[in-house]
Image 1 (spheres, helix red, strand yellow):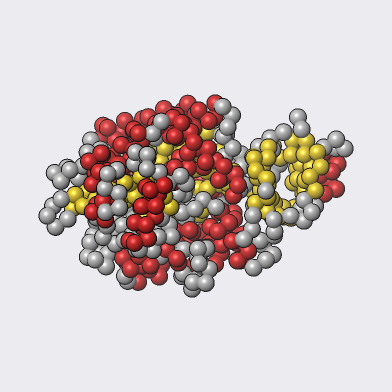
Image 2: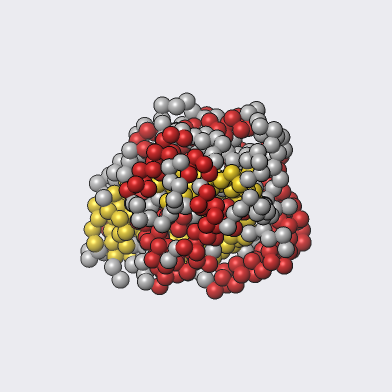
Length: 534
């Protein structure tokens, strides 16, 4: 067993003793964290020497909410993140189509509703009339298709909306080209998945893992696992190719049939019982209880600026049924809830599970919590529900449409991270990649400043909700590991834990916050093995 000795650093442990200068790694685990002299004695004279020369060491980041395969897929699609209007969207897609005339279909990602507020299939037909075009919204809750794509996935003017989803229609009742929520999942995603080969998904996973390693993400919680994605991850695991630890929540799709809904819970429980490795685990279920503010599909109490008032994707009764079943099976429940109605329903469903199933050690969680009532924060904290949030979603550079759609005092209480911890709830940070970039350091910049990582010159967004940088890092390491029941595996730098850590090229705690946007990860270590060097 190889022993490694790291000395002369600034080691932020995210543990009870926050700082150290040295660390001993024996095999894949940490043997000691503390001072140089003691570390040298414990490591012995034959240890591999790794002088840090004052460099900052952090626990590897644990992205508390990610979509791993989708992240790798998005990296290979037309990038529309910087497209500010219809002309730029069309130009990017047209250029990609011209560059690859043999491509069977064109896929793009990152469309923001503020760039094209009322998209139609004809807008895409103008530039690519002969091949299917699929444009994924940046939030992964809507998709924009041209006429050929609508035909390819089987959507016609008379196709009925599925439970929890919508096929948008024009004034004449014809499918306009936009589909959201379960309509997107059941028609477009299902069709696109059927077109992919194992080689395609293997490549997507490889791309995602490489990106995680380069930016210091050593573990993720995948928030929408399905059979095809699981098969891909298992192939990588069997080949010894995983370089990021994956804990996954099985996606439940509302069917309108109670037995079919419960069958999905049973499948998740079966997988959780069979998979418990440090590299790949199924730990719970994921439920999309509403949509997004940008798409006006998040379930809110007061209407949006356009007068719309959507219903939740899952009714409270249907939601409660699967939450109670998952809780009884010992699964962790993660509920996507952005609007205040959806948040309240999520808390109520978990409360009913506690009442019905009795005492247990639970770690259920609510994802996003963008528009939330203060009374509901108190309720979730008292129930021990984890608040899983994503600072990158509050970046002022992408907030114009979010704020315009709410249009009232709700915009001043958006993303209230400190209110969660003040009430005693565990707060964890992730990126929801690919709805935002997975790089952790820009995420930390936004958390610590409420400023934009995309355009730092913009005014801060609800500045009173910013956090101390050390707290933000803890929420993205130690707390994120706790939330997936891995607190005794990783997330901190402490004796006995897995040796998952990163080395930065500068001490971001001692420099201006802007340097979080410039800092690079020069070494990523997972289980004592180097998976990235710069």
